[in-house]
Image (cartoon, rainbow, N blue to C red; front, side, top):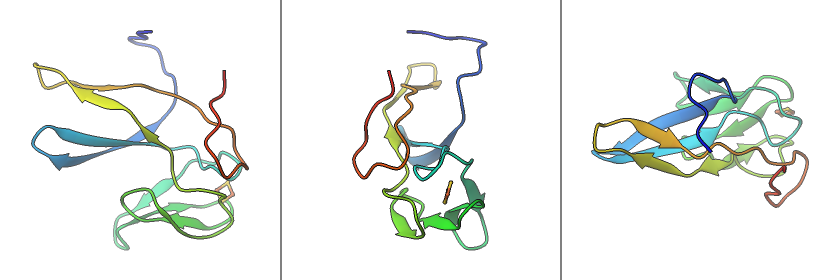
Amino acid sequence: TRSPAQRLGTVWLRKKGPREIVALQAECPHLGCSVQLDRDARRFACPCHESFFDLEGKQTSGPSPRGMDALETRVTADGDVEVKFERFRTQTRDRVELG
Ligand code: FES
């Protein structure tokens, strides 16, 4: 599904290599608050209940039941980044896609 010019949600993108982009769903797996980048501490932080994640999205502390959800990405020949945007159930240890 393509959804140009339609806001689906928020992701964090991080360049990992010349053509490698990591996308992390910005909704916290705990209760869905928006995870923020703490640039100084070089980590992601959820302001609602203080879950913290490293730059790879791995949970380091807090009540979140899992790390940030990584999303599939693709860099096109034009250099655009395409993200397969998905949402997952909160409060579960395993990723469960929402339909
Ligand atoms: Fe993120 Fe609770 S919603 S820690």
